[in-house]
Amino acid sequence: RKEVEQDPGPFNVPEGATVAFNCTYSNSASQSFFWYRQDCRKEPKLLMSVYSSGNEDGRFTAQLNRASQYISLLIRDSKLSDSATYLCVVNGGEGNQAGTALIFGKGTTLSVSS
Amino acid sequence: DAGITQSPRHKVTETGTPVTLRCHQTENHRYMYWYRQDPGHGLRLIHYSYGVKDTDKGEVSDGYSVSRSKTEDFLLTLESATSSQTSVYFCAISEGTTSYNEQFFGPGTRLTVL
Image 1 (cartoon, chains in turn blue, purple):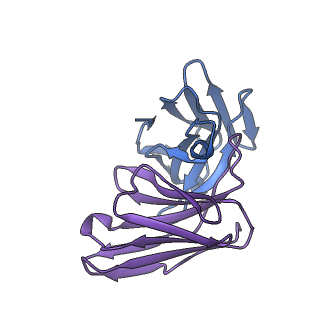
Image 2: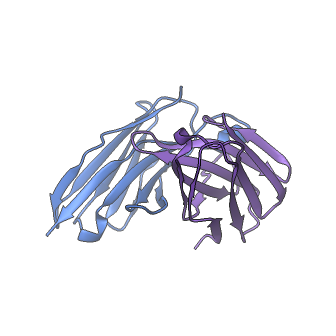
């Protein structure tokens, strides 16, 4: 069974802290990688796609290590509004219609306090 | 706003009754997906569609059927609801390429089966 594993947390950090989330995936054929954010009782929302070269969007940096099948998300200068559950997501990896489906980790909960 | 609506947003029903959930999109995306989210499991794929009248099963398809007679609508039916189908159901859409296949989610339907 294809899996995505994440540390469930919770991560409790003060405002301004830097926090890192890690994720591993089992399917070496996966081609697409994402971090989604999910607020309580809301739908998941795309935070950022993760590229092989690594990518940054403001305070958020994502890294991908294909050899180790490992994905990370770094949040700098944490804000209260960053409190949410962060989902590590990869695609199914098949080279057909089924490959478009996504496999979700169970999520890592972040709580930022003042 | 990805232009996805789900109806109903909340539903309480009794074991053995049929239930249909609707997902409607305004973006004309080819791919549509139904996921369920349960504590301790993350999001799991139920069924997906890659075009009108083209559907396939996901990881947890038992007890569910789907139909897509128009590009904009994807229906999920529980023929005879069971308590194990109490969950939050999310619809998602995407362009469906296997590279960087971002998916965008509807607001969810909370279903309780008594």
